[in-house]
Amino acid sequence: MLDLAILLSFILLAAAISFGLEYYKQVVKIKREYEKARTAFNDMILSYSRELKRIVNDIEKIVFKVEASSTRSEEALNKAKEIEDKLKALENKINEQLESLSKVISQTNDLERQISDITVSHKELLSKVSNLEEKLERTLVTQEPRIEAVIPIKREKALAHLTETELAVLEMLATEGPKTAPEIKDRIKLSREHTARLMKKLYEEGYLERDSSKTPFKYSVKKEMEKLLKKAETEVP
Image (cartoon, rainbow, N blue to C red; front, top):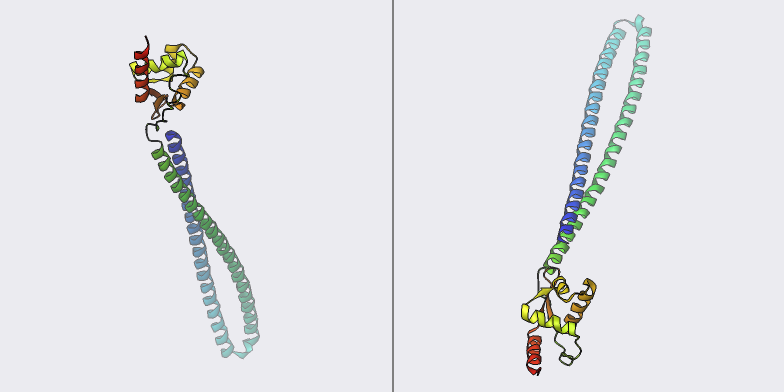
């Protein structure tokens, strides 16, 4: 039982460690995704900033040219139209990048929810492990070696209903001391099952007491029974 309890504790501990590792992997994965998204976004903003700066410079040049020469106004308008088209294309590109970033953020939120679920499961597992350990401790305490409470001898039965084999067992235990059922079996030449039933009967009827701290149980004659046996011996003519 103790080995099974220890094995179960190791299995639960391994499960808790596995959940912890999965939790750590998910956190690292989210961190990497976030860093990638942030880097991509920064690069995108920097690129757009440069493009806008260049466009602004082009516009300033165009304005200067328009002011310098009205004859080149048509060319300036064409240039302005070209720049306007570029700005629209750039705006569309920015919108696409923002949609991609929104998807990354959505995936990050999903991962965060998954991690939250894993965390809750991990806490529940730890709670179950803790409860199981408490139960195992209580079980181990109740399984400490002890002598079972003696069943009061039933005096009205005394020796009247005992067979010769049962009397022989009682006399053997009274003279030789405590013995286990297998030791008694070899002496009285009965089967293991028959001997076990005989010892259980003598115990339940109050003739014997037994030590259940380990198996097989060790039986011994009660002090009252020893007195009755000695009295019976003295009464024999």
